[in-house]
Image (cartoon, rainbow, N blue to C red; front, side, top):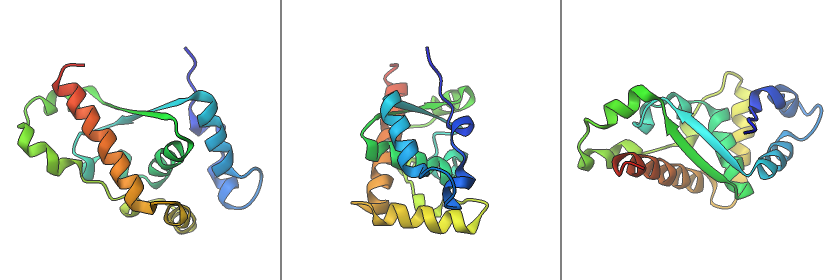
Length: 146
């Protein structure tokens, strides 16, 4: 098994400063080579998930979608137990995602990443629906015992 952690391979600060390689292209190329990303999410309630509040994490899902690679979400074990206590009809409202509300510590990062997302085909609506779809699959797989 090979594990690639983007944090160790991609210098996001250089990318946005216009130094070094084009990070968006580089990340997309690396993701295509790997063929799959796995996102570890802290809670099944999307609007509360720390993962979806972090703009760089959302951006990585966006790049992976654009590269056409497989994306899986996995829940931390505490959330799996919590999910087992929720009624199925309550879950739909928990899967709402708004990538443009995600934050980054540097306002320049926010501006550049938002511009990249908004200029892509489908923009924020595309990534919101893709993330919601993947999140729904995660929940369905858990509920169905996969």
